[in-house]
Image 1 (tube, rainbow, N blue to C red):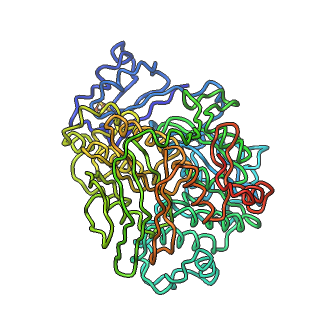
Image 2: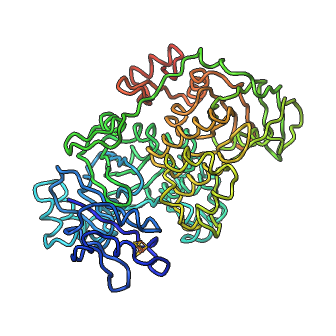
Length: 572
Ligand code: SF4
């Protein structure tokens, strides 16, 4: 079975000459494979299409995708967005008393599934005459949809930055009594007298979670709860979600594998071609589900999601000192209003990727600004000062031009485009206007723009935000490659521990009291840095023997106690 999807936002018949229709070999043979619809936009008849790919290549706006579905897939779609739109097959199963995690690439239907299960979107079953209850006869979903009308569902949306557009006024007015208790649990009592419009991304995220979990519901659907949060906050949110799940059903979309592993009981994998189709796997136990995803092979559908399994390499300490020193710094002190940053003396090596660990508001970005010379320290020496290319944490995409125009403006574009465009999946976006990009698309663009600059040090602040797991790992490889090619150094500030483990060769830990005092440890080997960081969090990690990924131990489990006794918080 073949799926042909046209992105009607990209399709622009006023600026093309219907190449898709003119060059289609079935049309040329007299069939009506691609034809003009009522609004003048093309329609592809999937029953006639032979999947030759000519229309895909001829369309000047890269608006068409045609892909074959797995042969093992026999059932009808649950939902299709229009005749040549995205198709979703199967649904995850909400299970009372459990946290169900949804894992998969952006654009494979996770949010669509949540909207269907929460009753916000009525599934059209791909135009089939059957009913949703009949479609899932004999399965838990039949019962679920039978009761959906009387079920109270609560949905926490992905885009928390839109909350101030919906809720106006003081926080105290938008949360109920239970919500205030949850805010206290999440260390946010101090925001109750503040205006919603004055909150940071991390505060908005925790407010949205507290608001959702405090509502009286039977099923809770939580879309990406970790965005904008640091590791401690992610673990606290995970604990709260687990507590709520004891009496209710909770389903969570999450791309941070360490948080998902900590929070979920079962996993459904979403796979397919982003923007074209998505298939929901059967439920797996959390360990098997994440390992199956990283292995990339779905046995029941005989589908390989990627050519190679993903493995996490343990960096040998001998590799840590191979490179020459790029920058030396003494103890640095910098006071900014009520906040003070103090660092230990240290060295940063060339061709190194230095992971920066620490809670929000401990001075990580301040340190980077000092390194670049943008900020002068109150005391301390940095030798030499290096040219830095900086990708900020918050990205603004109000640029008028297209992605291609923005990228081509950089004189290094033709030299490095092969290392950036394919791996960061930017090729299909070259004609898209920057201000229409999604969060993940904009993130990939700004990572590319940062790496195109000539610099001795690349500083990327939260490059994993808005990216799915595949994109995070692809971005990590791109960053490592460019650093090597340019013989530069990279500092990566992030809160996704698997991403930091995957990308970093060394680590630098920021401890202290957020907003008041930041204490930066000297850059050290990855194991030492992780150990210092996790000891401060009082959380232990072990490595999964199948793929080397770090996994959080359950608090007070045998492993957790054993590792704490030995001081091995990060078990490599
Ligand atoms: Fe033109 Fe491409 Fe749209 Fe066909 S799909 S009408 S070639 S823009």
